[in-house]
Image 1 (cartoon, rainbow, N blue to C red):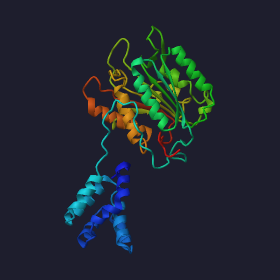
Image 2 (image 1 turned 135 degrees about the vertical axis):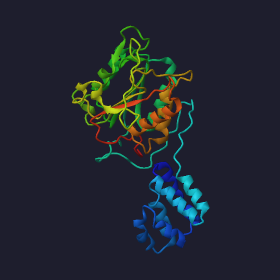
Image 3 (image 1 turned 45 degrees about the vertical axis):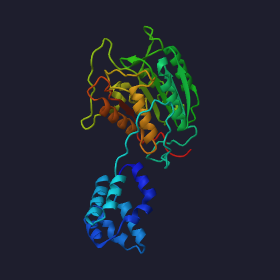
Image 4 (image 1 turned 90 degrees about the vertical axis):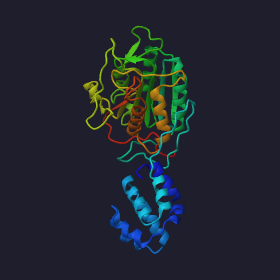
Length: 357
């Protein structure tokens, strides 16, 4: 039971659940063969029977395999009802079905994950600034969805629609010069792109801006107000080459998701861009897609993943889950996006929904 969602529900219902469990001699004998059996003797020293059962079912169910073993032991001791209920708790959470509604209700975090050596600090209110650029009018619904989601997790959101790259550049320069008192920054681009560049509204010839230029504006030396703070850049645009040619995505040996340092794009980024995440909706050489609902394929998957899981999954895990979902839905088709996340000097975990305000 290693997913926090199912485990939390189990803990909330454990007092009711253990009413169906008999701590029989046969079950105790089976428990001595369980991977967590080293804790059993200490647990059995407890005076109250309910305390014994509660501790066994909390300590022996941390891992999914261990939980399955415990369910099998219950069944072998003749407690089929308790075994079946435990197996139900041990199931993975199913991803939410897609909806075209603008508003998705974010699951509130139960535990504060902010600060210290493990997590980036994310407890200011607002959490930070989220700047969304949309250069395709048809994507207004997705823009509004991201506004709703990010405001639910306490970001101050501003939307800029229909800008040329000169206009985008002006807005970004103003953000760089601002005090940026929150704990983080999100810059999101929804529009057309190619060759590691974004295009302004209207796609006029030459109206383009490199992704490197955008990210580099917020380097340690150029934007001191965001020094030591996580900066997230999300580009939901095509990455196909002009002239068109297919470029295969490169994968890590043990992962289908590309999670690498920024030097894979440009080695000069390594020393000046700290605590930086660059997220792409698709792999290099791949086109991004949207439909008549005003929502992109990547935006649908990532927004649902964030709303459902951000309360206990950090940013890298959210992208990996989005990648896996898209792969299962579109593998082998032209819509197989293979989203990527690239990082530099990221030494902590970043929870976008870290806990109560």
